[in-house]
Length: 493
Length: 140
Image (cartoon, rainbow over the protein chains, first blue to last red):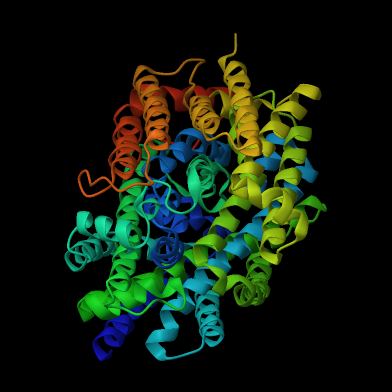
């Protein structure tokens, strides 16, 4: 363990050094929330990759696959195309929008497009709810890595993890998150490939693991839909693909890019990194389950420990140290981005709706205070949902954003007939329905068990589809909007 | 005629079919409808001056075929009995990994990058945008 801890310490010092440098660069709220709108394509692509996956893929993914089989990969396989969807549908429009309006958040874009305080307010609320869920996913992943290394309880690890992220976020803002992402995202992508190699070696090859698990668990476990069935699997693929256009942590990164022509190779970079992360999910979940089935490992008490058990047992200590440190810093930088986005919603979007605009200095000051409040909320959500499955918690956050924001943003910026009423109702219906269904599922409400559970579908997809229908139908039922000339120019681009 | 309106109507039809498929538990209908929604939505993003460039058109048609054929094949292949592996996986999973996972990167993501200047954004678009908003920008 000494080698592992040593590598973690050195790695974390590098990450903190990047954060400290970023803190020195952070002089205004624009620096704090959108990295000064001066980033290159590698920074934006790697930050998007990290924001889309990190702890959710590296800790939650293998755990989910250990339990439910290969079908769970439909949550990560969209990365080969989903970034292209975001870049194609939103990239140019969001970047051009930032030239005509003072946009820093997704709610700013919603307000600029619809001039609706109601839609803007709801999108800010959706952002805060979804981002806290995502933050809890990251912090829980952090805790699952930290607790076995330092022999701490899950709850203690959550509090320590949140405290570290808090210090980091308050100091560095968005710049710290983005530049750390470039460093740790690259290392994690390459390390994932190496870990995948180890899983093949220790599992006797993919064909051997497939055949053994088909015989000892069930043929469906290694089939394309695993034990979850086609309805949920296709739902995950759909929502995790096209639902990307509703993710504020991806969408607002288009504000940050300096030259829009550099949008060219962003999806290729982010996509290849995401696919390498997918290999880790594929390999570790299968290899650990294989080792359990042949009796070499004891069955896992909590499936989210699959990654740490594999690394501790089968990987060289140096590689384990790099992966652990990589996951921890991935969680830190991603959580940093999320927490700063959520605080932007609290101190910028919501006051704006009520006609109060804060100065840049006030936004910076109250933004840091909001970060503290959000951290407390995140700890509570982590305690409540963190041990029920990290990937599932991540899917809850993703589905909330997709259902609430994807139609208003992704269709709205490409269709002039979309109206503010359509945006308002689709955000409201998507948000309430998705949160309502997921909470009912978690609490085991009878109506959910009787009506929705038998459908065997992913709530995020059901609510996204309903939200799309609501957006288009309500838009057709209400008067055609008169758009400002600059918004027309953005949409014509 | 504005093509965005047409594609939004196609998107709406796809979404309604997806809703029916999920509530009625019709996996085949779900497989046939979700690529309609994804491709029509991507087409909205790809439309420039009311048309889709050649490269992106090829990309969108390829993606539609990969998703529809790939998922239909996976649904129709019986995976309840183990009959051996193809390139490390059972046949349905081999389609999933080598087809539905990797091919979209080649036919979607790489084609977008290769055809970016011709089909998505060039210097003329930025000049046209600046002319429409009436001032120069930092986009160059």
